[in-house]
Amino acid sequence: MNNRGTVATLLRIFPYAKRALPRVILGIVAALSTQLLALTVPTFLSGIVNNLKTNPSVSALIPGVIAVLVLGIGEATFVLLRRWLVLTPGTHVEAGLRRSLYAKLQDLEVGFHDKWPSGQLLSRVTGDLSLIRRWLSFGLVLMVSNVITIVVGLVILCSYHWILGAIFIVTSIPIWFKGFKFETEYHRVARQSQDQAGDLATSVEEAVHGIRVLKAFGRGNFFADKFARDANALRSTELKKARMIASLWLYLIMIPETAVGVSMLVGIYLVSQNQLTIGGLVAFFATARVLTWPTESIGFFISMTLDAKTAVERFFEVIDTNVDIADPEHPKHIENPQGRLVFKDVHFKYPDAPEDQADLLKGVDLEIQPGESIALIGITGCGKTTLTALTTRLYDATAGSIELDGVDVRDLTREELRQHIAMAFEDATLFSSSVRDNVLLGRPDASDADLKQALEIAQAHFVYDLPDGLDTKIGEEGLSLSGGQRQRLALARAVAARPSVLVLDDPLSALDVDTEAMVEDALRTVLKSTTALIVAHRPSTVMLADRVALLEDGRITAVGKHSELLATNEHYRHVISSIEEEANKR
Image 1 (tube, helix red, strand yellow):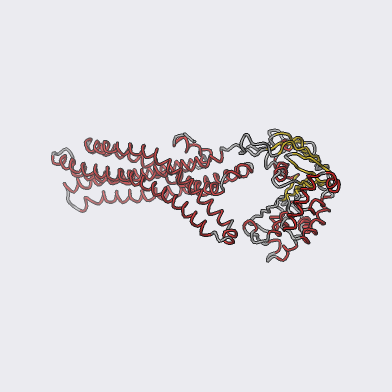
Image 2 (cartoon, rainbow, N blue to C red):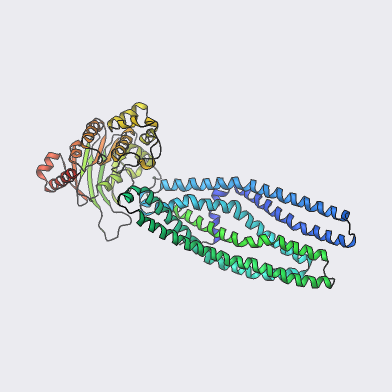
């Protein structure tokens, strides 16, 4: 839990906002100048009223009226200047915060994203950063200028008569007391509201992504009810915020108006006793009117500041997260990659697993020679996919090591490692971009010939029949394509990267038998020169590899030719029969 005060929390964005601060400060000066000019007007009104008493003519009004007109034009000019000064730098700060947050999300390991709901991250990238920008460009500028205006205004009120000024100073004490109490209570509710907004965004995202499932199972109304409950919870919290703000506004409006009423009675008495001129009394109430907006706005700006504090806290919750899988301080390089992949006593347990739970991988030893293909086989849940994810450091082994061409993968930068090792997953994820951009994601500078070859190996000829061919924009996550089409493009993406090691996690599961056979025939040409680790869920995939590795109880218990293991290993026969049975069901 963050126990920093409001000022300390908001100052954390200084590194991101320091380039904008000169214009923000000038914006505060412009806003303050606007208010000070407004406070000057009552002085001229006092002179006009007093002059009319001694010289009741139109000519006596002209100098004062011209002065008020000039001050009014000055106010409008400073308002325009304030807006010009602060609006642009605020957007730059927001953009910088958004870039930093996005870069951090890209830098954080997969384990972080496994735990965080996407809606919570989305609400931080959009809503929270927009709130910070509005506070910096509007809330901070006007709050500082208004507080200074109130202080100066109280001094001016005292200059007309100390008793009248004292009335306003005394009556302002409950306002400040209420403001400090409000901060403590409101911050908690504001945080709850923003967290609930993140949960609501998650619900919307899940419903949109899973719309086909919801429609297929007729569960749309169920999720609609769940969304309504979440929305009502957020609504209740927002109403609670509104009631708290309304309570503060009650003080901010009622107390100053009461002070005006009391001052009027006292002021009339002072005029009757010749202790105050009529012009002075008029100027006093004109000044009090000028202070109405700064005083009433304090509640709004306090709540806005506390919302901004919460937004800053939520931003830094992500920024402050340690990157557990990071680049080494002194990275090594592989000058001439060959593709020799070695697992040495590799252990792994997911970070959020209970302490008393056994490791998923309990000492995996496996050596894959350059250009060799190994099929990894085992019962469901034995850790095959997890083992492949360790090769590119999507997760880090909790013990042991994985070496690529004699170098521990943890001694390479993540960028270099992922240039040497490419992955194709069973769950093929595509992006809202063109076919060309999706296939060349891992190697954007590849030639058209390389692109064409990768598509041919993956049997992805269907792309040429799309409306704009290779330039056809694929819809979100590629859902406009069939499962088999997505998998073929994902496979083409891995092949086009031309890695020294190719890791395939059952990337052909959605293909029909004929297409799968053609893809496997084409893959054999690639695998002659590329080291491959293939998670096998079909007998045909096993036949694609040079050797087979059996993963059992967290260890590699057998390595050999398919025919050899079939003849000598009882557990291997059990796994193969299970795979064949599952394949027949498909």
